[in-house]
Length: 341
Figure 1 (cartoon, helix red, strand yellow):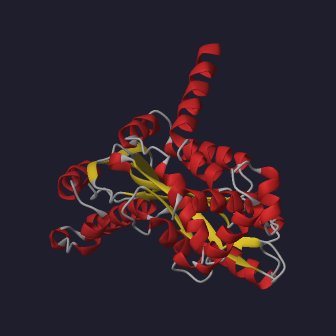
Figure 2 (figure 1 turned 135 degrees about the vertical axis):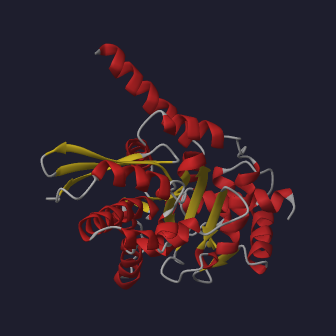
């Protein structure tokens, strides 16, 4: 596509994004100094329509972008968005604050700064056990402490009346050795045949402890899904059919479906899917921009923004590329509050 046709297509898309009204050639020449006549604009628009970048709702109406047109626009914008080497920076920033706290703040920022739907999913790396302890803290009360390889510490208070035969400290040392380096999958597949050597009381307590460990690890295996502002879609004229909106809302509420959508691997950390490019029929009336960040030993997180296919791609893409700054501001705020105290 030559520069003149590209400039006209970009103008049509941005006009339609802002107005939700079909764009005519007079509309373009009145508002923009493109250095060409209205007739030339009409000819270029006709060619763009022939090539599938724009279409008309009615014969006499202006033109609106197609998914192919939006794809050209997104690819054009991407050329001018510098992809920073920020994975290590993001990881260091997140290690200085609680991850969940940081994510909540990021989503509040994304939600307040855009009229669309903010999405996200945190996929933790498979957790491995580093250190394991059982501590007696009171009569018939024990504290199970689990420290994972990614430095996450989890604990569980267990109330259990044990017989004098149960040697808690010995079991603790034994499990610390046996569970070291194991993942949830490892534990689930382990035979633990050695427990047959234990007497009944020790064996019962052993099984209770291992089930608690499995329960803790399960919490860190699940993807954490974030969703804010789905009701914003109702404010767009693009979604007039209640049945369409309902199917989108229902899909948003199914965490596994949202996780699958956001975790779908692409060649680039940043990507935009438009309309039928989204391999899920519940979402193919939307455009979804997403950016994935590597959190080192924590795993990966993908932030996304969903809206109509005529959404303001420039603003959305800039927002997703600005998350590093949002994190920096969160940390600055925390530091200032501590100094005030």
